[in-house]
Length: 90
Image (tube, rainbow, N blue to C red; front, side, top):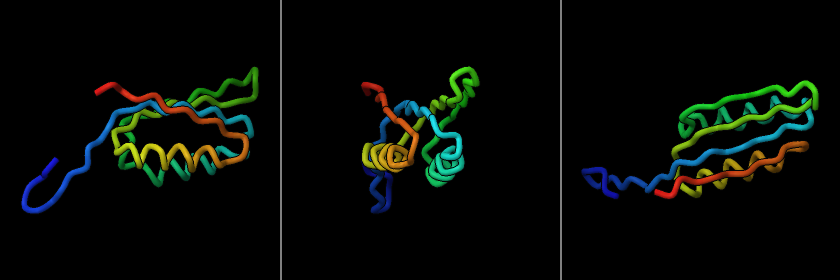
């Protein structure tokens, strides 16, 4: 997609990223990665599930597929963190 005057705008997608943090000492690293990608974040919701000693985070994003994959990859490499993304069809 062309954005005008020689600038090319990359095609973006909307997705929801589900994050489960099972090691509470990893939460700071998760938040740092999310902060680094804040330009793509539409909104986020965090739920502490105290009975299971985990945190559940859902993040809505609008970014290129490459950026979403990179974000999920960075999060998935953090110890005690599980990540999955679901993409909108259009």
